[in-house]
Length: 198
Image: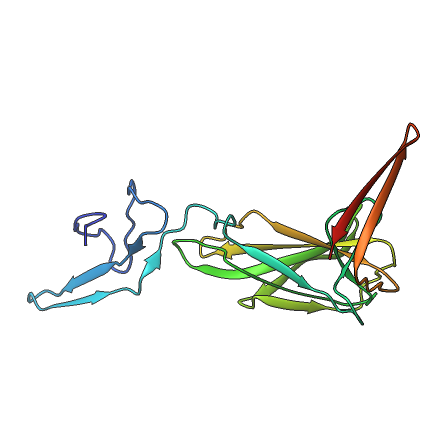
């Protein structure tokens, strides 16, 4: 373990201050104090670990998943799209969970917000504590619109990570497809058919 600063004599009886230290994000620092009285009797005590946090947590490995609250299917095909879109029928609640935010100094909590597709706020940034899942009810969700959930992490230095976002479509009814979907596009009197297996 290397010294961040070598020992020195404090000019005050109950506190000291160290300046000009060269510390990097994520290191752990301990402070040791030695007290000597007038007859050279001494006692030494050390602090609890202090994490040096100078940068924000990383979100590039994080994963956010919305758990659809719906009656039948979790996916629905919309006209013109070859891939499924996440859909739920519930128009007042959202359930979601996340994982994978990383930092060499401790992650000390999470926050989330919920917007519509026009960036109007359903729920402003909310403290989730140490939890990695949340259920938010009482939302004015409407059929045909999207809800966008964003999550971010905070570390011991009060630095917030970049936000991770995920959207879900709200639909008053679900359509459960079986078999195959054929998408037909007519242009200049030419018929193009593409079949997507599901």
